[in-house]
Amino acid sequence: MPRTRRFAPTAVLRAFARRPEPVDRMILACFVLGLSTRKVGAALLPILGRPISPTTVSTVARQLDAVVAAFHARPLRRRYRVLKLDGVVMARRTGAGAIRRPVLVALGLRPDGKKEVIDFRLAQSESAAEWERFLGDLSRRGLTGEDLEMICVDGSAGLIAALPTAYPAVPAQRCWEHKIRNVLDKVRKADQPAVKADFHAVMNARTQPQARTAARRFAERWRNHYPKAVRCLRDDPDTLLTCWRYNSLAERRKVRTTNAIERRFREVRRRTRPMGVFSDRTAMDRILFAIFNHENRNQGLSTPLLLTQTS
Image 1 (tube, one colour):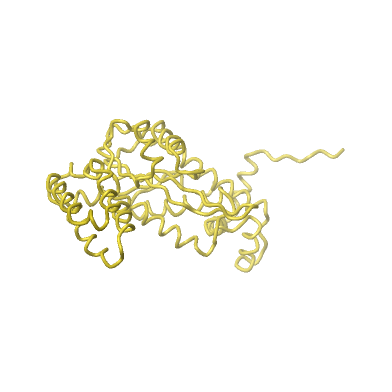
Image 2: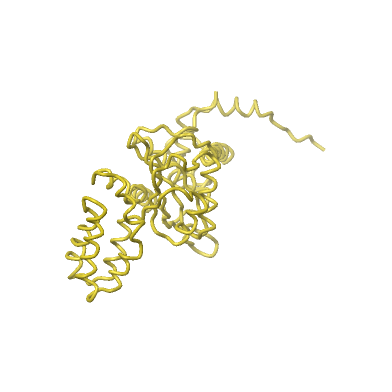
């Protein structure tokens, strides 16, 4: 029986290193665009003038997947003033059709004012158990909450339930942007501008007592017309007012919404819309890592573990 030829790891690395770096970059760009291993070779053939073997494509894919895995496991030694948490739904293709699953995201506001996507997780749901797993992992890796001044959350029931387990001593702030959407959903379109103006009077009040007074005025004016909208505002009186620990409106604006996460997901959707849905979790993980890493770099933050050519 002929002997199976085996390659030592060092030989594989030397062979990998001899391939021009621009080729690897093009392969990685194809993955970021959501192409399958088979389609990458076909896409690059007109550019390179020669075929790229599936083995080569798979090798580069594994390298990128290792970078993403290392990103998810890296120690979190940086300290953040504010933690923002949100879940955004994305679609993934399966044999039974497209399924929609949330991506849980943690973004940190640093002392220098920069916003950093700390990590993300592809989850089955936004249940308390899923959020506890995600937040527990962040805590074990170093984000213990000792230096956090507050946590801004999107208001999902699972996340609210998980916070006391993960960060019991950190004050929570409900996202004002999510709250105003929920309030306006209960108001006729013709009245929405007036309701929104009264809501902003609460949100932009100079002091916390003035915010409470504005909230009472809001309730008095609208409770007969829109009792559900008034109840929606009154559901979270304390967690909506956490941000008044900061004296200036400019400071409160930075911490009172999860808009920074939603802005990054608008970029995710812009780039992934031509793909429709992701073929698998690995493809989704790759594109999210690539986009969030790009957004961090736009903030002047260098994410570790960037893919480099082996030498």
